[in-house]
Amino acid sequence: EGAPAPSGSDLREGVEQLARVFDKLLAEREKGQTGGKDVLGKAITEVLEIAYRKAWVALSTTGTGEAYAAAIKEFVLACVTAYKSGYSIAALNLELYMNQKITGDEKLDSVLTLSDGEKKARQTWIELVYLTLNHRGFAREQAPPKPDDHMGLENLVRVITDAHKRGYTLDTFKLEESLRTADTGPPSPELERLNKAQKSIRSQFMRIVFIANEIAANANAK
Image 1 (tube, rainbow, N blue to C red):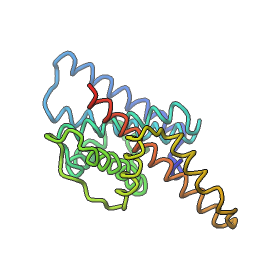
Image 2 (image 1 turned 60 degrees about the vertical axis):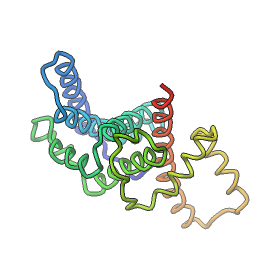
Image 3 (image 1 turned 60 degrees about the horizontal axis):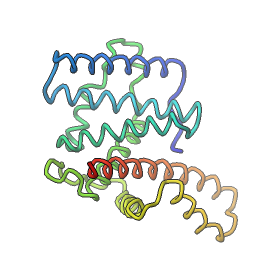
Image 4 (image 1 turned 30 degrees about the horizontal axis):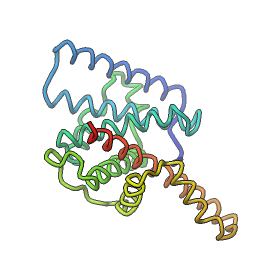
C-alpha cells in the first residue's frame, strides 16, 4: 500500500528514539510534572510523527501486516484526539511544525526530516481522518470546522463510511470491489502498472478511513 517509504537503519533508530521521548513525556504527565494544551499538542504531534514513520518502516520491511496496521491505528487515534480537542487541521499543522525536531540530536533530526512528498502524504492521512469524523458527526460540540477537501477525497470517505455502517470490513469491502471489476478484462501492461500503484494508494486510504470509522463507532458506543 502507498508510495515508496523512507527506510534504513538510521530511520529505525530515529523512530525508536522518538518512541522513548514519547514514553518519557507520558510518564511525566502521569506524575503531574507537565500539563495544559501545549503538552497535549506536543503529545499528539509526537504520536503522529512516531506512528507515521513506524507505518512506513513496517510497510517496507514486513508489508501490510500487524505492525503496519497497528502503526496506522496509532496515527488515526492521534488524529481523533486532536479532532476531539478542537484542533483544526491548520492548528495541527502548526503543532507539527513547532514540534518537528523533538530528539535534540542533529543527526537524527536531519534523518527524520520529512521530504515535501512525505509531508503531503501525511497531510492526506490527516485530512482523511478529519473528513471521516466530520461525515460521521463525531464529537460535534468540540469538532473543528469541516476541512477543505484539497484532494477530492470526500466521495471515497462517504462511500467507505456508509459501507462501514452497513457492516463491511476493509477485507470484505475490498473483496466486493475486486469481484465487481473482475469482468472488465485484463489491462495493458502499462495500464496494469499504473493501476497497481493507484490501487495501492487507494487501499491505504481505505484502511485509514475504515480505522477512523471503527474508532469513532466505538467511542460513540461508550
